[in-house]
Length: 139
Image 1 (cartoon, rainbow, N blue to C red):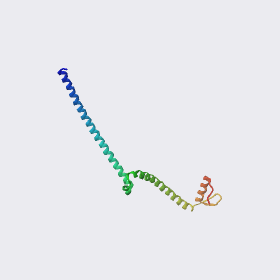
Image 2 (tube, one colour):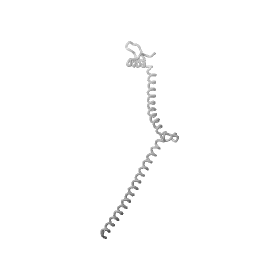
Image 3 (cartoon, one colour):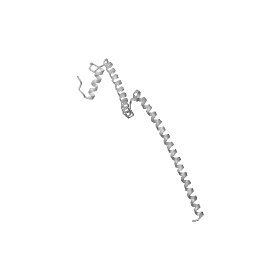
Image 4 (cartoon, rainbow, N blue to C red):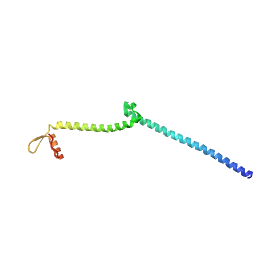
């Protein structure tokens, strides 16, 4: 091998080493940027979880401190379901109160049948209901 070829090989080897160093430096930069991005994402997620947790604790009220994190799911299930049930119970109570009021006041109202006999509105409604449902009257 002559000196010129030897010089060319050394230059190529040197250039290759330099490129490998640049590649390693770029890989390190990529790794650092990826780590920064992941850290930002974790920070955003942590902030979001803290905010959501604060909302949940405010819903749990003064009992929030006494509930362990693993009890939270049970609490949610119980309270979401119970809120729905409470709403239905409230609606039922209102309807029952309205019916009681109607029954009290309708007892005072009378209707005159075709034969001239008188019947209260509640008795009339009850008879109509029985005839539609084909049930015998209760004594």
